[in-house]
Image (cartoon, rainbow, N blue to C red; front, side, top):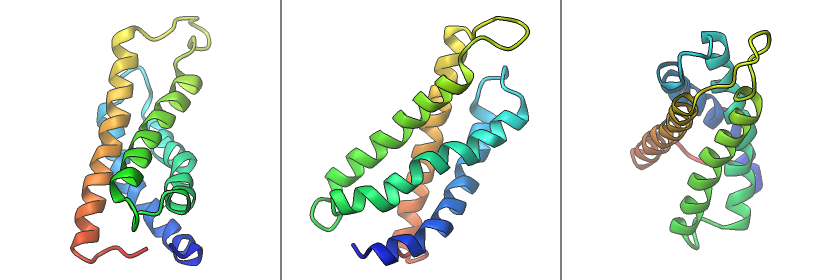
Length: 135
């Protein structure tokens, strides 16, 4: 893939991904997270993983050679890394209370992050097949 085309696609792809994933995170993340944190997660998590998925992985694993391998790596990396980042940032003890989130809250957060990624992947694939997206 042409790196210039990947860089050109990055901003619009990022904005679309944030627009698709943030509502899922707003609804899906556990209620222990304030709305501001959920909104932040929609912007921040994608900002951390999207450049790798869009700029790095297509060079390392060209989708034209093996789309299945690229998708397997990209769609495993993104939610896995985002769950790890979210846990590192927000699954420690809450300031002032010293309480850590319960197991159910942690799993709900991980499920919401994974679902958000699957949702944006699915719609992104649909949009690409309809010719609405080009890299």
